[in-house]
Figure: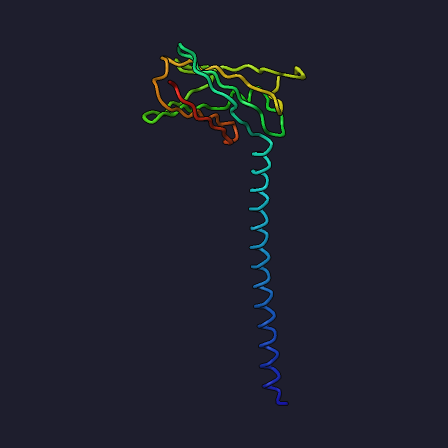
Length: 162
């Protein structure tokens, strides 16, 4: 076998090994990025499962108040400071109202209805009673109230005023 042919084959073999190792490096780097993205998504999902809610009932009195009862359906307790970071949106066919916690003419306040262990936290299965102070009585029609937790997780309830 001539030396030139052996040298050519050796150079080609080394080139193939270098290219294969570069492709393996790129593949492993991409796989690490995918794994990191999956870890971030799993952490977000875990937080959403830990902190979630369900509106169980909404009532509008004959004056200018809206009463909302919400269950903590998550797996984790929520401090009252986190509850106060939540937001309420009241939507009708013609209007959307953002209702802040305890400030302005239209606002909301709350109280824990069944703080079973008296720890002043909104624990799983406990109910939060929210009183929304409106400027006026709601007009007749259909409404949607959305309660948005500090982490963006929300619960929604549709009701009618007759």
